Picture 1 (tube, rainbow over the protein chains, first blue to last red):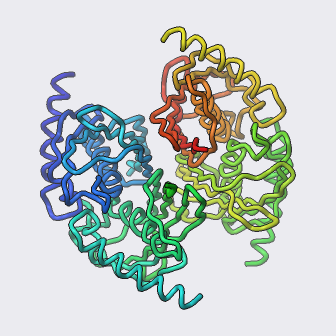
Picture 2: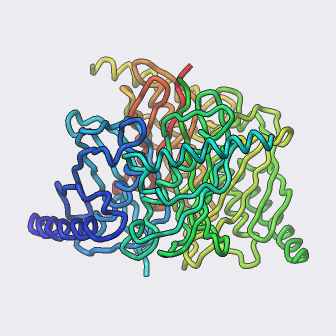
Picture 3: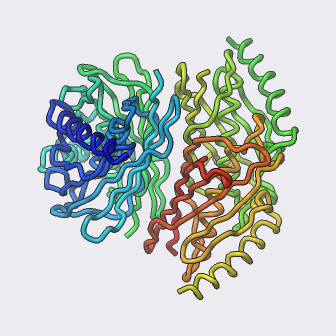
Length: 144
Length: 144
Length: 144
Length: 144
């Protein structure tokens, strides 16, 4: 079990590096670091930088959504039976801003993985004080 | 009325240029062109380029969400009584992919603007055939 | 085409009567009247009564959600190729209350119907003044 | 602290009885039993009965939504500084059905309570095996 998670972690690390260093939109997340992963879960850490900010000097909502999308997708890819799929519905509630310079944790977990659909939930928190910044949900179609 | 909309259009054009050319996350939308604007509505056009793609070669869901967030915010900023506010809830349903090279239209309208809350809806369509690619909703807190 | 819609209307009328008069939760909607239907759309009318109210004397949010769920499901059932399916995601934005005694219109349309998934949108308006009370979205899995 | 929760429990029990026994839509939840409450949380239990079913013989999605709405509202009412407010956005993901005769647990917690907005999350599980049936979120405006 711990071994499976270890493998999941290594595989996820490779997937995330590949995804965020290739040409494509996930390169906006190229400062993301994997903290924990495997078994349908993926936890990452990221510092809010000036290229990720909105006009108010805090994390742009589009980044929050991109994190919900990408990190939950990595959670599915980091399971023992990896799968990708396509997004069906994604929603985010914004509870608190994150200023440039602050570190955030993105914790994605698989709520349910069925034959056709996967349901994922993502908590984004302030690393320093643990306060909840945003919560997202992501439904993916994973059937053939 | 037409004059007000004209002014709204010019003001919006400036706002969008300012937002997408400054340092910050909206620079990922720096190829967006304003098509129609003013009176609480904002319609933009954008080509799907390789920096906006996912691993499948289509528009990344994070871009879709960023468009829902930004273009609906511009719709509020382009009204006669401009306001910005902060995001409360955002959701997107993904109906169809958009390939690299395709042009998309992003049409944001204000469903309701109250004293404290604004409700916005965004349709993203394929410019060539008019098919609906995604539909988003965005609730903002605009109170003092 | 008009004939197909006519048939759709009659079929829907029977379906709605059957659904709201049998033992089950849709009996809470037994005062709903079909206004227009067929071709993937379903428009109903209903008066807000005291059994549908919240403690504030307006339409309960649970009724709003039930209307989004049921009327969009009827829209799918009233198409030329009727299908039912199961709910995947449902969301509602609440813009304005409806008082006991007021009449509301519930207008459900099919945004996209694919092989596996159907995306539906529902506008709930005040019949007297046309103001938007709530907007809902409903994603259903319709695959085998 | 434990005393405060105890008081919260008693207060909530009265509120729930009052809400579900008066004339109004929450009477559809009149078989709900309070399991735990106070401090911004509310856990209830309910058996799926035939009046709550859909045509497929499982819990109707409209009931699921009504539970998300009501039980999260009770969570806010059962806090040390009770507040009610109005719904802004509500969404539900449906993961698994619940058959007539099964018992379900509805666990609502306050994710964040600010000055103007409250964010709540609701997990609905099968009591017997703990499997997640649905997850909902509810955003309320609680400002004056």
